[in-house]
Length: 200
Image 1 (tube, rainbow, N blue to C red):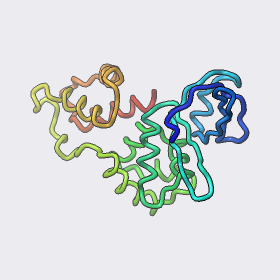
Image 2: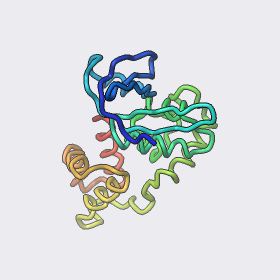
Image 3: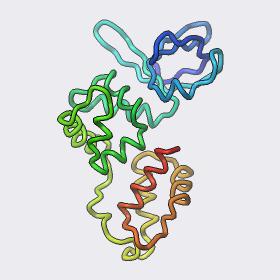
Image 4: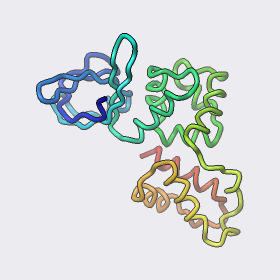
């Protein structure tokens, strides 16, 4: 089982495939479109989190620049009807934060923007992935922030931490959206923070 690789990107044989050389051995990694765009020139060093997918006829490696992408990929694989190609397609269209926002807002159009995903499939994914990603129950977060006596920031921080974001990411997002606005409910603040994280 290969969990990570550090080496030089020496070739890009296909749109979603790269060749990473590690100690004289070349590893073919399937990657998302944003990952390809974020890579430096050929020959540059890079570090990848890796998911090793074992099939009857092959062992295929999927590479990710960030661990939250790898974890999201593995959650997607657990959803009904989602294979590696579709999971990678979803992450090529939506970052983990953008996917989380789409699920929280029940945004079928965002899921339908993924090639090969129709509205019926998107509706099924929405239900399945909300459970698999263990999204916070927003029904308890609908009260105005002012009614929570300063608990808005704490609840949003806790929800984002549950989704796997690092403390510094959470702090920066909350500072940028102005989480102390007493006219907003915690649900709105959480969604705003997720949009901010997705934009980064």
